[in-house]
Image 1 (cartoon, rainbow, N blue to C red):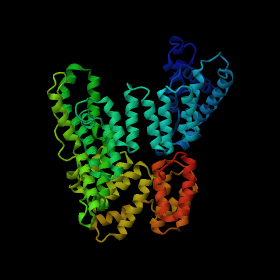
Image 2: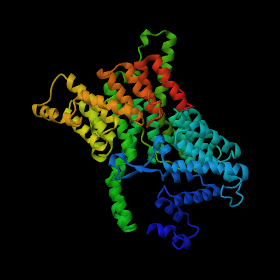
Image 3: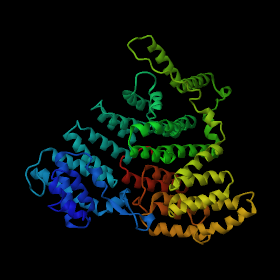
Length: 583
């Protein structure tokens, strides 16, 4: 019925011949293995390329549907990993179509169907779409080649710079990506979106001062940009800045920014009571119900989850590595020469001034504007008494981690990472039964994930090495239930089955391969070359291959395989990430 309604000559397409929505819905419901689908998507792409629609690549990516492995084929999901996208029949079809377009437009200035001459920009947008298809399958060098052609052809299009920056960032050169997207931002100073993307890329590149200058272009003149963004509850900026501070090892300041995001959501929760009477009087019942649903899922929203997860990870890291905070301690000046002492004190003074700059600048600027009759007075901001986050670092690490891990487990129960953090907190508190419960929750969500495997190995090692046992009842439960977690196998059989599964499936994701390789070395189930082969034999032609997962794998290989194994892996990295730096 739907195919007749959207696809027949006497259906909706006749009533609304210019509607793109009807044509797009028709493509969605058509079987992807038929000739009718190929014809429909061919016409759709030609029309969108002729019009120059930049979002065509993102639009077509919604057709990459595949069976969800976690639902035993009863549910569909979007193919997101480059390995899955490259093998998807729709992507293969699109590559063939766009390659034919580029060839025909380059030689005849028309599409292969020969329906007439196309505008000169058609070839430009065909290059752009082909570059996006390269990005989707992690072919970054080929994508850069095509997007450079686009920029040479039309150097004033902001979309081209944004795509080039994405390709460079995914390919490993975040610094150049930041410079490229900033060049695109410079083409349109009124575009808030591209300014925000530039700020985000600068923060990921570790250039916080450049990021602050860019975001200040769209904030009020009164006060500092960070204070204004906090007042506007701009969570994405605070999350990116917190990530930057965490990578720098400034855990106190990083916690302050993550806590700022948490405070925004607490404000949402408290402010909802002010809207009930207003919504009933001013808006429709449907909008009011949407507000109630939003509040029900408030603590499970992505930004809150990301902030809470990082708070837990920081507290656990400091608990495991108390020396990580020694860099913030007062240095021993008695062992320094007079020149070194002077330099160290100057650096400490600058660091202290930078930490307290936010509150003082805000007050100074608002006071200076107070005498002017032409400038609107800004609301005075409360001075931040703890900009460096020392009060947060003085709290009990495990108690704070426990609080946020419990919130995540309660409000994001279908997330593996929520239960992984719950396990990490529980075992450090000596709550082995709660840790075992978290493992079973993880298994019910995804029984083949690397987070579960690595924590099962950790749980077994903790059981063997602990100095004191739990209560007798807890010990009975652990003894009875832990073998069920491993499918009735012994621990050695469980690890060996994981090794065999990884070696037999070439597409096994890289984090899982790294976790298995670590288990081989830790448990003595094989030699160091055996553990390296689990990673190196994949040639990085597996799932979840990105800069972060490769960095973790490289750290393990360097610790086990020495310069030889490290050199082999770096050779694979150069092929996979042609712009990679700082490895």
